[in-house]
Amino acid sequence: MMNLVRAFTLALAVAGAGCGSEAPSGKRQVDSNGGGYTVMFEPTPNPIPMNDVFDLRFTVAPKSGPSQGLSVQVDARMPAHGHGMNRVPKVTAQADGSYKAEGMLFHMPGHWELYFDIAQAGKTERAQFDVDLK
Image 1 (tube, rainbow, N blue to C red):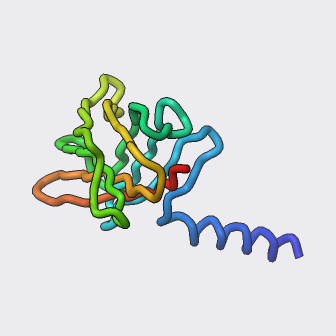
Image 2: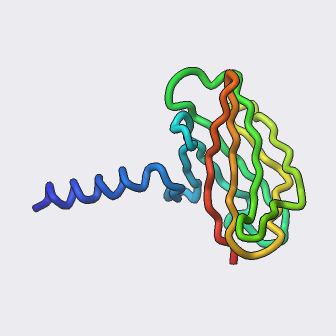
């Protein structure tokens, strides 16, 4: 019986691996649409505020190959409203290999899609995380 419980728990973990998930530390993780990268991010402040500026600290981990030569852009949209943010965040690489997106602003409540566009060697993949802002 214990093996059945372990197998079911593992199956649930694997089934949710491609979706956005929240790790115990408050960091969130999402895989890119092509499966080539994993993005781990955390907003500051946490949780994401409504109509107040926040930053994202994040890492991009290639599933195979080197991480050199990555270019990353961050954006967000409200698909139901057909618009995005009113600001363009500034993304900078940090000395420890992580990135920081400064100046993010979700100016209204509702469903937002947070995008990490990762370009390397002429190929771009998008990691997308859904945020429901109350």
